[in-house]
Amino acid sequence: MAGTPSQPGAGKSPQAFLVQTDPSTDNNPRPGNVGALLMELRREVAELRETIGRQLLADRRNASIKIGNRIAARDGKELTALYSAMTGDQIPQFPETADAVSAMSEQKQYRLLQALGESVTGSSDARNMRLRLAIGIEHGEGVGVKTFLFGQND
Image (tube, rainbow, N blue to C red; front, side, top):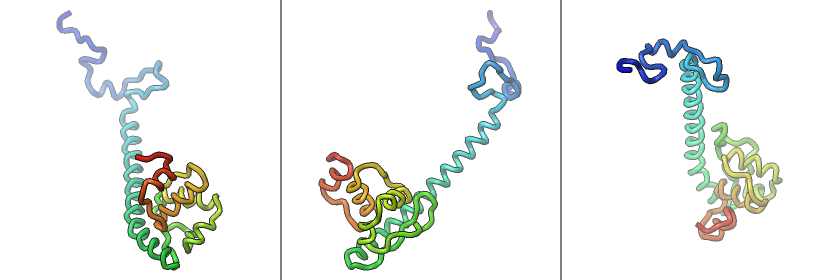
């Protein structure tokens, strides 16, 4: 069959694919929906960019604040509130001192870890140490902390 297209859509114009529908494929996107699918993809990419940008900005701000919090905790002074990875704003009701962090309920620790974008899994002691590291009032030097937090030596 020389001259006969071997593929089902060969020889059709691109416009034919944009209006073509296939009722037998309810679960699959139809070629007629390409424009809508492309718009949805663009919207999702824009949302991801916004989320990543917000998280990076919070991480950048928090990096220098953590250094100050470590010094403040050592000197018994007030901590500076960190920025939420979820909202990009300073975290409300942030603990004022290192002792206040230690005295926090597990529910408050959980909420603060979530706001900072940290894992909330593990034992109460592991979450407490992870929170202290995230705030900057502890440092993670040595194998012991890694084993304590993650259960392994890498």
